[in-house]
Image (cartoon, rainbow, N blue to C red; front, side, top):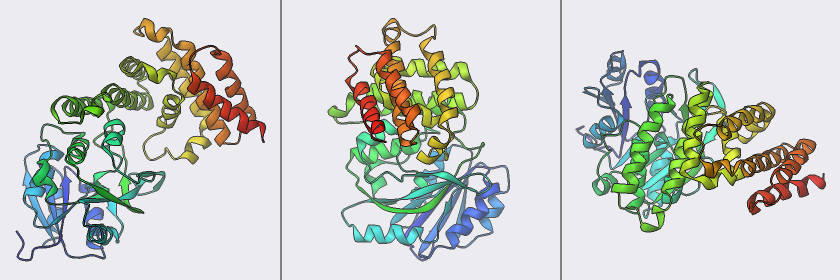
Length: 395
């Protein structure tokens, strides 16, 4: 422990992070708030991670462990921390200079909350800014939102009071991915409250070597985390019914991850599995709007980018949906929903083309949505398409 007890401990798990760690630590050193310590927890690196971390001593303390995953690394940081506030930072992400000052001021101004978060902007492996932001639509973190949508904020954007971990325990070392999601669920179950600061103060790096780049690995760990949440954690009874939709969403994400990597058969299989888990999604336009967005890689899913590439994305989405609805493993129940699914697909496209102000394309898809399935009990689809058509006729 340092002789002076700092107000904040910054915890950075690092595994072979030498390509980015120096820049990350320079961003921490440049903070306007300086009453902090940094713990770099080296999770069995074989590159120059150790040398880089040690070069920032004494402000940075270096801890080493045999490779055990990010949960174990963060736990070593938590147990070795001296600060009353813990701020987490991935070794390849960057903080803007006001980040820690913002966290500390926010927690001091809101004694009733135990955590604070900011927004992030994506950058690529070269540090170039990408179109999308992370957390830019999040005003409140709720248990329902986390159970259904993954972690709406990323841990590099988060700071919490240290006593939170006295209440919930540490990160689950059995999870090498989705560990942050598991911690967030446990925080919300015990009533931890967060406040958000609507400023982009983190640069979230995405690159091919990211831990979650492999959709198969990401899906395996997400399944384990969801199974734990819905069977072993004390989730309130009113949320238990969300399990099928939560399963659909992680499979939906995996399917699009496979598609982006050109593993088309795996993509179709996972999307079939997703719809079997939650058949109602086949009839919902938002399923296909989300599908179209996730055809783009992480960091590129801004509304502007989706609309700019909508023509290309429409063709790809149609290919994927056709592969799903013609898949030999599709159940008889879903086979009966094929027309409804195409109707919902075109309703989603009508809405997106309307947002793009491509009125003829929007009108064509709206008409197609109604024509494909005029007599099905899809009031949501009809309403979605009709709203698009009504707006179109006014332009």
